[in-house]
Each structure stands twice: as structure tokens, then as C-alpha cells.
Image 1 (cartoon, protein in one colour):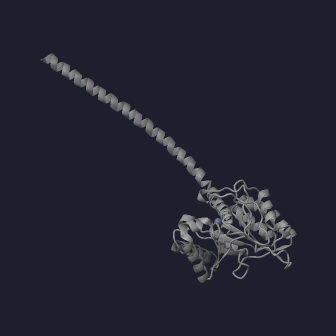
Image 2 (spheres, rainbow, N blue to C red):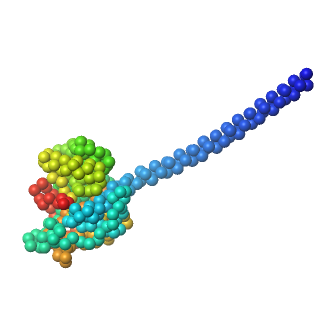
Length: 326
Ligand SMILES: [Zn+2]
């Protein structure tokens, strides 16, 4: 009896020891997993820093969408007036299209005057800023050349710099506060709420209300239509007009946000863009992004080329030629 009991007890002790061992092994395993998790966290930290340093890449994405949109619209034959993006521009998301490198002809480009007026006017426009030293460099180059330009600003970067741009004598236009297509084009109210937000920021910084706008990616874009629908798109345009706004697109894309862009690429895009059938266009409205280093680097030479071609520089206003995609 006592032997049996002893056996039972030693069995119980064995079970107990086994359970404890299993528990210890389990704890070691959990500990190791925890360490691995910490490694994962440190990876995330790395990812975070790459995200932070990659603000421009977000810009790039939106800007790539811009160039893609232009291409896609071109392909829809809605923007025959637009110089098509170069084939090296990236396509993103659902807007994938084949880019077209052919230049517009005088017949399909209302901005081409074939030199009849004898006056060549250039509107330099800068989107998606202002921010950082690239904007500063752009402002310095413009100042050195005594040129005034038009800046379509956003509200999520260095809004304090909006005042610097304005005080330097440039024209401020509204490029929306968020530049977030999903947010902006959720519905027409969302768009106008956002527009009011950036209008208020500009008013706070400069004391003036801008009546100039530029849609992120331009008007008539697939991005805009696919979100708002044709009716919503028409309503936005109509309401803008009723509220006294004029929106502007462009007829030359400098390509400063195209993938693989470079200083020479931008210079070449402008060189190609101002020509049509061997003649200079009378009126050109060029799309740049002042937050891009390549833009800051290329601008002095671009200005030189435009000056040599006889262009005078003006800022957009509600009375000047309405550069809008058809
Ligand atoms: Zn933009």
C-alpha cells in the first residue's frame, strides 16, 4: 500500500517536473519571440526614417500621378493642347497609359500663335510648395532675373514661407490644402471645404484672398473624374466660376516630377515644349514644382533659354489667357 502510494507520488512528481519543464521551455520561447519582435520594431523605426526622408517621394507619387494624368488625358484626346509627357514618365495605379512623345500641332494647340502677335509671353508656375531650400533657391533665381511667377501653394508644408513668396512679389494661387485626391474628390463639398482651408491659410499669411486655383494633377484628369464622376466634376468647375475663381492648367510640363528626371531632362522638356513645327509658341504656361531640387538646379538655364527666345515673363491673373485643358 505504502509502496503503491510512493509510486503514485513519484509519478505525480514526474508529471509536476515535466509540466514545469514545459513551462520553462515555453517561457524561453516567448522571450525569444519578444526579442524578435523588438527587432521588428527596430526595422519599423528604420522604415519610419525612410518614410520621413521620403516626403518628396510622396510628392513624387502625386506628381507622377500628375504627369500620368496628363498623359492619360492626352490619350483621351481631351487635352490636345498639352505637350504629352515623355515616355520615361512613370505610370501609376489605374491611370496607366502609354505616353505619347509627339508635339502638338498649331491646329490642335490654342496656345500656339505662330508668332503673329510678335509677343511671346511666358508664365512660370510652381506647384506643391512652398517648402525648404529648393523654394528658397527658386525664389533667389527669380529675384536675380527680376522675374515674377505664380505659385500654386498647398497647406501641409511650410505655410510660413507663403508670406516670403508673396512678399517677393509673386502671385499666390490655391493648389488645395491637402493635395490628397481621395480626400479632395470624395464629393464636391469635400473639395470646397479643402479649398476654403487653403484660402484661409493664404489669407492669414498674406492678407489677400486668391481667386486662382489649380487642381492637383490638372483639370479633366482621370483621377478627378473617376472619383467625382462627370456630374461632380462639372459641378466643381461651375461652382468655382460662380465663386469667382479661375482655374489654370498648363501647356508645358517641365517633367520635373517624371521618374528619372534630371536637370538636362527638364531643360530639354522646356526647349521642346516652347517649339511647335519649328516655331516658338506665343504663349507658354510651364508647370514646375518648386520643392524639387532638379527644378531649382535647372531654372537658371531654363530662364536663359526663354529670354533668348524672346519671352517676357508674366504672372497669371483672372484676365489673362485661360490655360485650361479642353
Ligand atoms: Zn500638385
